[in-house]
Image (cartoon, rainbow, N blue to C red; front, side, top):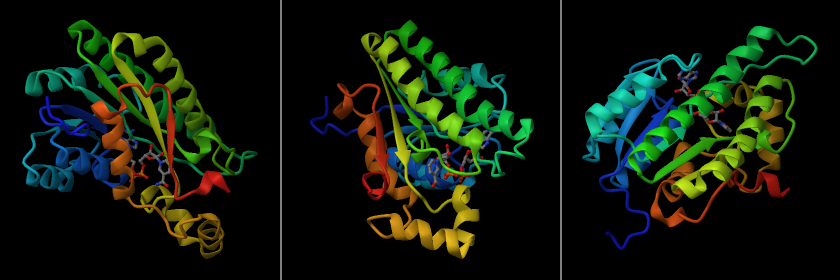
Length: 253
Ligand code: NAD
């Protein structure tokens, strides 16, 4: 066994929504720590593939729209065929819809909850079952949000989903810790990705947000890598049900 607590050599991680943004950053970061990557996306993750393969690790792209749970069995099946199963699952795919709560539509509610919460749970369940069947240790990392802790504004389904992610992370940890599964979450702060494009394009909102972040800058996909490698590795074997904020200090204000 490697003496490096953070070494992921020989491990395989399934990462959803990693053709861009935070998911891409974590896929590349885990690959650089030695991990093969199963990239689950709606579109071709060409840039992620190039960057993962440049680090010398195996890469498998699985096409899936996580609006429904239908693709979940295939994700596990393809992972099994190519890498003999997975050790790590990062539930990163997510979307946000913005509208005043008085006008918010049922469609915007369902679309967000289905991906951010429902598919996250059922993919975790499928991954958990596979680990238990094989008596294999597993690491699940859910991507939460500052809106797991705060209410937010004009994003009701997003707040509901991310608050739910924090609760589900605890529930799954409570049930599965004794089975050798670590379930934890990362709550990114305000990160410069597609998810926050509308905020960054609004000069007033952008100024207000930046002025409240103690580090004085937006986060980057690379800022999540340390937390992701920690929670994916042996270093976190006794960490269960925790949601780790990587937010430049936002929640401390
Ligand atoms: P992003 O929009 O660049 O990435 C979101 C990813 O999810 C993309 O790959 C997208 O294709 C995928 N996705 C969305 N709907 C999908 C579906 N139906 N099926 C499959 N994949 C789907 O934004 P990001 O900021 O990189 O977001 C990644 C995660 O981080 C999300 O869960 C988001 O809620 C969370 N997050 C982001 C921030 C931020 O400031 N950027 C803050 C907190 C949490």
